[in-house]
Length: 290
Length: 302
Image (tube, rainbow over all chains, first blue to last red; front, side):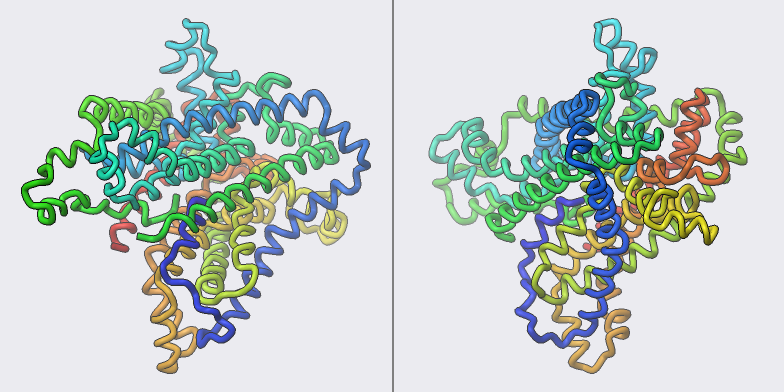
């Protein structure tokens, strides 16, 4: 979804310097946009900042640096990272295969990539749990090998891999589609082996979209709740992720603690959002429209 | 994800075929030149196998699991799960929520896309970034925000109690959380589309004396209708499937404030797996239709 901001700056038609425009509706639509966004997003977000200002620094830090909270952040971070890396590897392969090769059923496969965006997270959660639980289709193969694929950190990683999968494919795919093969041909003519062409020419160009895809998947993974809650088992210190801990605090009416944990998560999301937008802005400046 | 340009066909004739006409007999013929910009067939098959295997494992298997589990105990159990009064109430609540949230976000999406793509102003990039906020915020936090504002300890909690208005743990809270989570979808779909279309057609209409509304209905809307429709469809899929945010504000009152995803959670936690997957299968159908619509609309646009 956010992958689109990559295309925003890339449009060949740049809006003119509109100190004057013949088109109507600027004030009305901008005003409506700002008011709607403020009421629905910005004012609610400020609620969490204001609420946290009711906490003293001591309270805030003791909540945020509590062992259980730190453990939850660590699990969220490590597992999102692992799932993101897995998606970078396979996302690159899938994008490459979809753009460069042809095989029967390609259009169908291409469409299915978007399923994790459209499928409700709770449905994904229970479906994955049923597959990877001890008596599930894949669980019954993995458990005898000593791999606990559900109710473990591996389970969380499986859920986050599902959720994050389309991000990498959908950021890398459009970049690959824009390329002609001229540069690769030139390299091959000069005697470069295929692997050298890939590692020296293709891959470096793919680093920014791969990073964007990873950051998007990672950001989504850190906040993800619905698909994880079923498969994780939710054991404190072991498989309890940060959003789940917020939920637990809310259910115990510990709003102050929930606010503090949420604020940290929110700051992390903001930082990631700006990193993503920065990378995309850089891509937008470098890659010219075809 | 919603970028329709992703779905456009790849160029039919790769650039290297041009070489034949340019280079005459001295340059390598087409098959060889193809070989230098693609991998050996072993590598190709290996990569295709890896990609298809991963997609089968990550995407197809969960899809299959939902339907297999739903029909595990027969069609009777499946149907019984769907006509259960609590299930029907959940389906109704989900439909009502989507029916309120999707049009509101669609109107916002059109307004935002209009001012962002037809005019240039300071802070536009900031506005676009801010619109992405709901994507990067955990759904649990999204729900929590509305508890902080409208909950009994929140800003308006006491006042709302006195007026006997319920927002949190009732329909308005569920709608607000859904609005928040699905807020950018239509705008995100329209902005790139309208940006590539530019402003010439609207300017022409304005010069010929068309009023703003007339211009919108006769010039802009026909140009963006398929993109708008897809934005609405994906927004609807997310509105129907939202779990985390709605879970925080709903209060889980059976038959009253349970949406379909929450109903699935309750059934699952009560070990009524077949029923949980039966209700899930409806949402899977919504998701599959959404993806099919994306393909169909992308072709229309071409």
